[in-house]
Length: 402
Ligand code: NAD
Ligand code: MG
Image 1 (cartoon, rainbow, N blue to C red):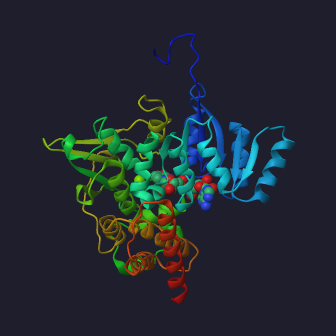
Image 2: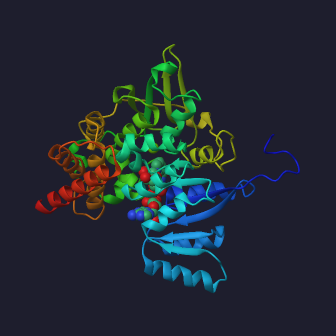
């Protein structure tokens, strides 16, 4: 029976947006608001941004809102009560996990930035939800454990990262069990090259946080903007692609494509290369994840190829941007290595953003932590979290020494 059968009301999917006040969160709410017949907002969560969450509660009337701190929850509760809004306001990680696994939630948008998203995202997977994965760090940290949990609990995992969403669209519907089984020889992961493409290491040493956060093609949160500038974002995405698509690191080729129009490609054994194109606007992959296997309007302007005019490609410069190589090495090392890489990077990016570390220092600090810590097994959550804690501790102490 078609969902659009006249006279039959569609079941409106209940969506929990984790990290609602961020760049991906607000784009998600934009797409949802275009389709009130299909989706309703069940829960919205934010870390500290209580004013932004208040505005979103007014507009989307969620059943639940979650903030990190109890004092912020008290503030939001009283503001909403004053306005006669019935949202249940909660605080802390346990509340995040509760909304991610709540029985009345159908879809979870995992859009918290960094390792903080791991527990709620895994909870959504364990509850068998449709999980829209923007929070790449969660998958990078827990790799095999994450993917095994998806299979074990029958969750539907849809990649939101634009490159992985593109590859998902370019692969056969059933693509598990190794790429070669499906005639795929390589995944071509495109990268804009960031704002400092072509810069020498000398020039890179002068980069400021504001320069690093001004991405030429995409408007994003500050952490991922810095990752894009160092190419660590592409490194994390390489790890992400290996897990999502059962690929070996040597089956993923990074291709710098400054226009960000081709979002990634899959190459096949018969010589075909299938690409997904579009304007650089995250509402496209978000709408794809929400509606899959259907398609819905996303508010994204149609691609004008005459205006694009040309598509350029070049190899990444791994000498000036060592983070890509570090990530590939971590994926090849396996076990806890990607969790260590991710944690060291989060500390380094935080230090760069508050002026305690130079731009070049990000890759140097990550390399030192990855070299110093032995690779362990990452079969359970405790081992992953322990590796994360150790790497953060070591990165923080190395920062203090400098
Ligand atoms: P952002 O900084 O704009 O937003 C992050 C959101 O998470 C905010 O709502 C914030 O309140 C919340 N948050 C931050 N720290 C938290 C914590 N410790 N606990 C709970 N909540 C916390 O980030 P973003 O750009 O929207 O990115 C979100 C995720 O999506 C990241 O993992 C990023 O790599 C990924 N992603 C983003 C884009 C993009 O275009 N922005 C593209 C691809 C992937
Ligand atoms: Mg991406």
